[in-house]
Length: 94
Image 1 (cartoon, rainbow, N blue to C red):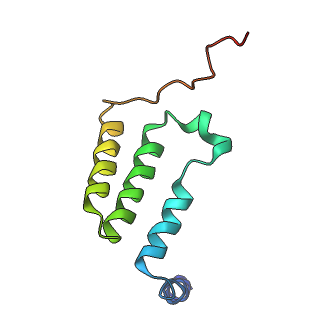
Image 2 (cartoon, rainbow, N blue to C red):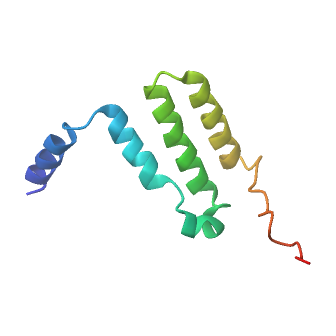
C-alpha cells in the first residue's frame, strides 16, 4: 500500500518544476502573519524559512541571494542573531 501511495505522489510531483516545488515549500514554511509574534523568535522556524528561500534563489541562478539567506539561517542556528522587538511594542502612544 505504501509503495502505491509513494508512486502516486511521485507521479503527481513530476507535473511540477523544481522551482515550483521549492516555491511551494517556501510558501508552506513561511511564517503566516497571524503567527508572526508567536514564531518570530523560533530559531528552527526562522532557519527553515531562510534555508528554503535560499534554495529558491539557488534554483533561480541567484547564488549571491542564496548565500545571504544561508548565512542568516546559520546565524539563527548559532544564536548570533535574534528577532528585533516590534516597533509598536513597549512604546506608549500619546
